[in-house]
Image (cartoon, rainbow, N blue to C red; front, side):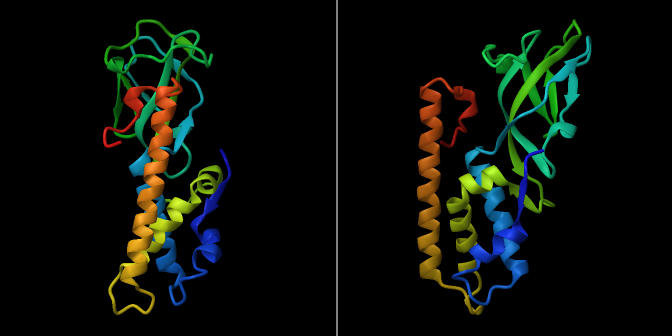
Length: 205
């Protein structure tokens, strides 16, 4: 598994301009921000280890292959067949499979032949409620957007809190939306360049 940056270790940078916020609330804000960013963008993706296909078996659990404390939002490119582990293999058509209970790959029709390493899935992930951090590569790549939403989350709180500031909250909300638009454009560019497929661009984009 890739290295994970815990919310705890993010706190010193995150709290630099938020005097008075306790660590518990700050970690809650970072958790909410990381989860929301993953759901808003579907950018937290992983290519999972190959799965052996068993004849007449329709569903396959992917839970043991996922990073800790994550669930699947949707599938990216899926490769199926004897050449599934070859990156240049054409993606398997989405009409042939479904996501089931956020951890299962389910064929519409059960395969009739067993294939070793016959299924490779790229998945879009979200942190679970019990998550304590984000994979380090993801946190480092998208820190500014996560930071912006986390601060918006805290600054908009009840005005009786000493750190709340509605005007700054609006600024951070606007900053978060700017980052969302930027990363959505990047994803659409990837689609136009043939690096991802149209079904993997969230409809809200």
